[in-house]
Image (cartoon, rainbow, N blue to C red; front, side, top):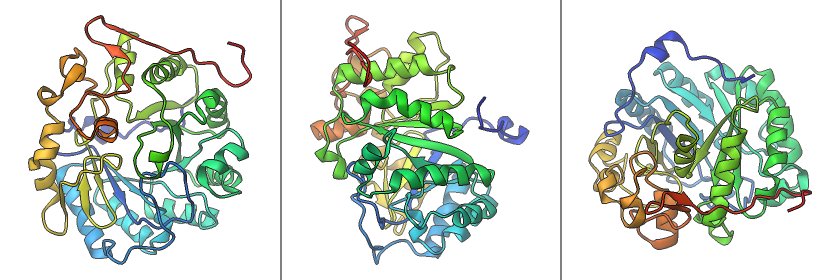
Length: 365
């Protein structure tokens, strides 16, 4: 069964968020500092903290503005958030403001059972750990640090012992897509409540990796759709809006059409506001303007929320309201955030999608 607890009655009774008015999810890059050298890091993280990072007071103000807008989920990410000595104070402040704080720490020696318990005591509700392989050799090669795999497994157990929800994040690339079945089994063994599957956007260090092609993306979407309901954890995707189309085609209820700049917002370590961490187009900075003004009124954010501005087959697609394509991937591959997504296999003129054969490692084609 899922380890995600049911939301309290008050949370269930809250009206849905108007994505034109506020993001349901705000991701704050607490710092760019991290001791790992992940091959697909969108942040191109560095060993040391940047001198112009948001101060504690500025970070508290960011939390306040998010709460006043009606944002629900506040994610402390990095870099490695454990590099900030004020992390627990800021988690506590977010919880007191009615946000639902979660943290995505790096699996380094900083991530101890004591630090995990301290985050729980401060008010964190969930911890997300990255797992990009089912064995040490593959995962550690991704992360650039020998021992990361073992430390991740150890941290996962500590997260559950601390009473926190555990989410496992996996970035899908050509290096690991044929081992996703084994990673899924490991996610279940760890007792995770959610598997968050990220589809590579070639930005940051990830620009050196080869993403899946359109038919391969479609194959993974269909496999995930078949997997849902058969595993003891929820499945969510990132930078894969076409997955919502695949679910609807299978008769599943439509999911909220959250996307880059649409119900979603990213704030960098220096306060710059982006539609997402994978779409490096700045819309403003909280040091010079309010979060609400930038999110609601920025021409960039407004265009990303308007399906009528989509180009190519995305603009003609009957699923453009539900899907809209990955704007980050469109920008990374074409230079235009409103272009059709190059890695979408769906053809709106025929209502069909090309799909590759997904043969997992150890299986016969």
